[in-house]
Image (cartoon, rainbow over all chains, first blue to last red):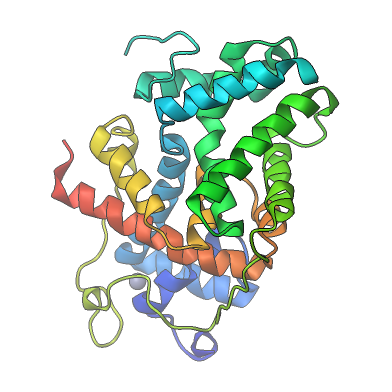
Length: 84
Length: 220
Ligand SMILES: [Zn+2]
């Protein structure tokens, strides 16, 4: 609501970042955020950090599998591999 | 970095890199002819994410592990029926969710979310009274991408994700760790797209804060 009446603050801008990246902001909110980002290095830096986090989270992937868990799954494989 | 042979998934970054270079489709074809190494790579790639997402649906770690194991049995029994209309990953997580429901450990939780909640995702101390940065973030993309193999970075990200409360953990795992679309995530978890975005927003903010902490602590 505040977005309709005045410039977005940095504190508000950071809460819009996910909807911005997900392309889920209204056209009006998107324009307001883009205007803010164009003149605010801090928020542009924040957006860039979040983008980097998404890329890094995907690159790093899930936790490594415990050897015992892997072994248990391989035993399942040996038991069921003929079934398909 | 030395290349590793398949089947040696001991959790080193080299193994992770190797696994990431082999396409799921290639592994599935090998799985069809009973190749154990292909199975090892697939479970190394997905099992822990399956457990994490199962944990959203069932009420204990042990039950989540069981559901994830049941999922692999279903994969082994049904791999010849997989037609490639969706990605293997999507198929796999759909099986998991169906198994979780069959396990019936509990009805899917009511996620009570107030999308208008103003719980801040950045420490209020970083803004002045007018809401402008007093301690602005600086871009760290180049630095982080150059250090993706560093244990300190890997640890920071994985620990941050593991410490997320549900449903943030399931949403961040599916959306960011596994790269499924928001649409797929909402279907798998029985949430609206809007709620997925709210949950994702909170989860990502915590991972960002953890990574920023590592960067500020000094990456060289
Ligand atoms: Zn700003």
